[in-house]
Image (tube, rainbow, N blue to C red; front, top):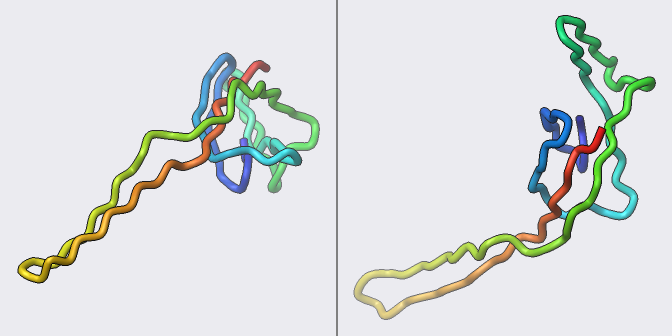
Length: 91
């Protein structure tokens, strides 16, 4: 499945944490496997679909970035929290 320009391998009832989804996000199926049968799109399969459910939009854990230069009293500190969406593949 391709979503927001990134590709994911998903199964039914799987939860994913990914970058914040926009309102007009489109799910595209690139490859479909059922048992030993595999269908590959060129580049997208039109007759297959994946249904997702948005669980929540939130901010991820904080990432702290620190810079310093020795012996010169130079210290910088920044923190960043990435906007993420939690989704669940329903079908």
